[in-house]
Amino acid sequence: MPPLYIGISGSATVGKDTYYRLLKELCLEDFGVNVVRFALADVLKTDLQNFIIDKHCIDILNCSSEDKSKVRFELVNHARKMRQETNGKYWISKLDGVIEDYCKSENFKNSDIFCVTDIRHFEYFNDEVVWLKEEKKGILIYVEKFFKDGSICAPANDDERRNDPILRKHSDYHIRWEHASPEKYLKAIVKKNLDIFAKEGKLLTYGRLN
Image (cartoon, rainbow, N blue to C red; front, side):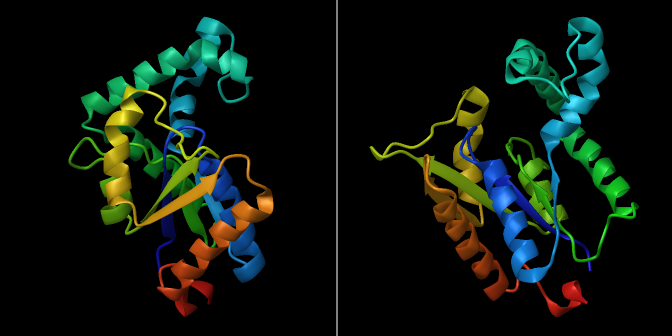
């Protein structure tokens, strides 16, 4: 049985990596199953690593937030250029290669769950959402963060503003949590989501665990 794919979408700083981390903890605690993180942004950084080192003396795979901000423009421009030239397929294809390599490694287990922490686009016919939900038969989680005054964490840029309504529409589950909430509260929300996956048969089956 192929691995289950879970994609996470939502605006910047809403807690997509937090959702992944808590999902990983809960899957290990409750089922003894490993959740493996993949990210399209990691593939982008790898693609530009040597260029940015040569030009800026910054290792984008191991740098501070301050240094990353110095080269963000180049990262964004390169990401957009390659998406335009391939109708959204370039970074997906690169990530497929990373996943294939992992599946050939000694770390891979049939019970692994693959979590892609940055599903951000649905602008082309075979874009990231289509890749996740149709090609990989995966689940899309939309994460939203709100504040005490009732406002939500809004998209950070034009790219996010264009894609955000479509990502919401095509998500399978919508997670909302409050800014600066305690870890216990966040974990309970992910636990509830995990229980729904299991109940609906989307997360774990006898065949996956044996």
